[in-house]
Length: 432
Image (cartoon, rainbow, N blue to C red; front, side, top):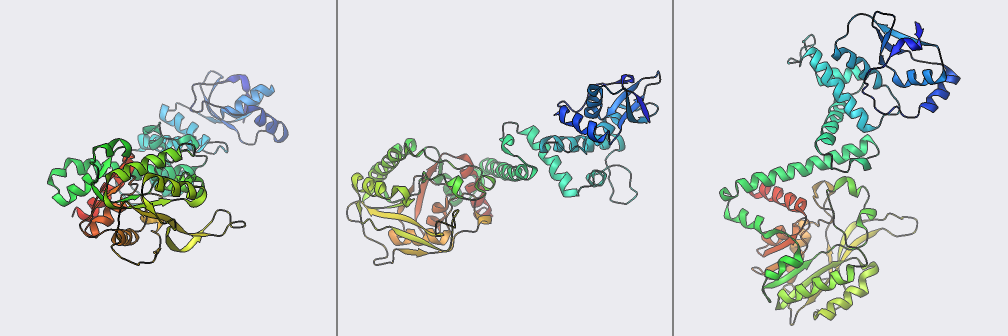
């Protein structure tokens, strides 16, 4: 059915941004109006636009006198009018994932308001459910569930970096990461509330992960206090660019600017030297390129005795982001140095430590190393009962390794997400 364009009135619409009308006008000029717009007869020769505002606007700007319409007769409730508009919009091709997620949620909520919530799984049960919304839109139940969760997350956490999510898939990954973060912080909150009821062992493990900046907090540690220091600083090598899918897997990772890195390393080494005993060992992880010579010089400058052949953590398989020009790297390096007359706990041990890396599904931090590797390193450089310091805790894996091999350790990290993951882990493993 066709009616006059000037017979149609437009009320407030769900859609605020009509997009590129000029492109739509060209399409309509070439192919005509493929789909009619939806209107409701008001009864005095005029019609209220229900759905198809972009097409209506384009046709009006083209100067058309008539337009093809689908007419709804009689009174329509506000919910029914809203339903028609929204369900027509869901077929648009140019919606962003945010628009689509919010639109699906509103359609679902409108259907719930009209039909009520379904309380039975029987085929003829009254009411409305997520499965009904999925069937209405021709999508799967998990998809509609996830889209509604996305809409709720965007609304609840507007400060989150949703704008960098170009696709629904990107947004779903960010939602998964956000959900994991919230779960961890809820676990920490619950842990802190019941901390007094936990075992002394569990309380001490939690207290050993100190939330704060190493350089500020370490001032409270007296000179010559620790037997060993295991230092795993940021490598200043843009780890996020080197690790595939890094941003989708991990909540946060603090890198150091290359220009500030030398001073950062020097200050770290000075504090480690100060708090170590005269026979203390330094274990210092590093990225060889381009820092090998700088770190060698700084360790010696600080006062440590260093044999500049690093120990190697060898992995079964390597990886590379540039397979045509670079061999796959299957090892990581650390220097070991001592203050004064350090003595190995395992004299003559090989400087190669062969252990498979931790599977990604078991990591809560991008640089988290396998438990058995850290136990072996601590056992090589320190006796049972020794006291260690970990300036940059990250995952807290070194604390866990020290506990399991009869050493004591504490350390620092300024990221509450890292501590939350650690607390959640120890509570699950040792909390009972």
